[in-house]
Structure formats: structure tokens, C-alpha cells
Image 1 (cartoon, rainbow, N blue to C red):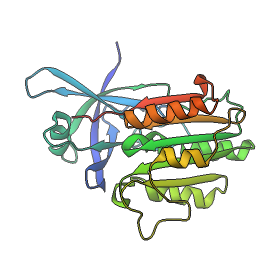
Image 2 (tube, helix red, strand yellow):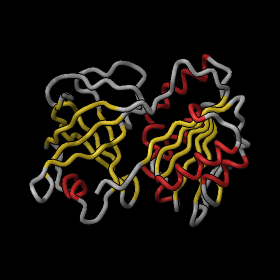
Image 3 (cartoon, rainbow, N blue to C red):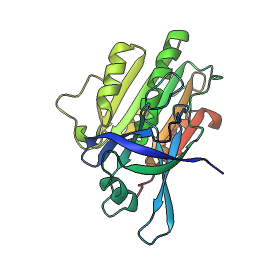
Length: 249
């Protein structure tokens, strides 16, 4: 049985009109260490009284074993009328939720010998990539490696954690941040910003089975579309790592 533990809300901010960044501490005095890319589950009672749970990737950027009291960060998409949305909307600072984890294998592997990572995400599907940034920084120091992040959003207002990725790209020349906007290109967008979908930009990157490993996280249709494109480019299936996000209602 997975271990359940209490999380206490210690801070929050809006990332986008319908996405909230939440910071918790584990309220039983224990640390919550995790591998970047993993997720936790939040447990609660649905309106009909039945047990419910929702999964959220951990957004915390860390390069060490987390100790007691260190932040546990997630990004939550608000869906009108959703049970999980109602839970988080009503949650005030200092209050608790019940969680379990961490879970998942959507992580960078120390056994990889590729020369480029293609990280592809939409919406809150970029959350695990934010957690991976310290690990990516270490890999860039240790290996002859390039990393490209393709981030799909409709508008600039929905580019969650965009400043974190842009700042990281500015400090790490072999990390390329390519935001893709399906509705409108922001006036202040950077040199690698694109108008269109992530699959359009993926074609421009010419995926190479000899050098690339790809990660796909976010909207299931986006994941499926890019999975097929990467397979057609010759990437073996073990080199296409997927995690689909659905609306946590």
C-alpha cells in the first residue's frame, strides 16, 4: 500500500488564467524526495462521497535530496465544476490535503547516451520539465549534449513557467526553448518562438534516430500525433517516452 501523508499549503500564485501554482510542505515532518518527472496523487472525497484521486507532476526544481520543510510544488488546471477544482479553489493557506507518492518513470535516465533530448509538452505537461532543469544543467556540464524544449500554448498568457525556461536557456547555450503559439504570437516573444503547433516545429528540428531521445507530455492528441511523427522519423519506441495529461476535473 502506498504511504499517505498530509501536505500543508504555504503559498500559491496564478500562472495563467486557469492554472495555479501551489506550494506545500509535508506536514508530518518527513521529507518528500523524488526523481524529477515523477508525480504525486491527491486524495479527497468527491461530491457523491466516493473516494477520488488526481495526479499532479511535481514542479519543484531540485538537485539534492529534499529535506523536511522543503517545498512540494505542483501546477493545477482549473476546470469549471470539477471536483478537484473545487477542492483547490476552497483551499486556503495553512490548510491540508492528503497525498501519496511519488510515482512514475517519466524521468531522465542516467543510462542514456544520446546527444540530444527533445522535450515536448503542452499546458501543465511542461511541469515535469521544470523539475528537470537542475538535472539538465548537470548533464550539460558533464556531456556533449543538446536539449530542446518545444512548449505548445494557445497564447502568451498560457505559457506557464515560460520565464523559468527562458532564463535557463539564456544561462545555458545548449538548451533551446521554443514556445509554439497556436492562436497568436506574442509581441514580446523571443527569437525561437513559433506560430503554430509543436508538431510543426518538430519537423524543423529533423528528429534523428542516431542522436535523439524524445519526451512527450500533455494533451493526449498532441502526444499521439508527435509519437507517430517520431516513429516515422525512425526513433525506436524506447526512445519516445510518453505521459498523457487529461483534465483533472
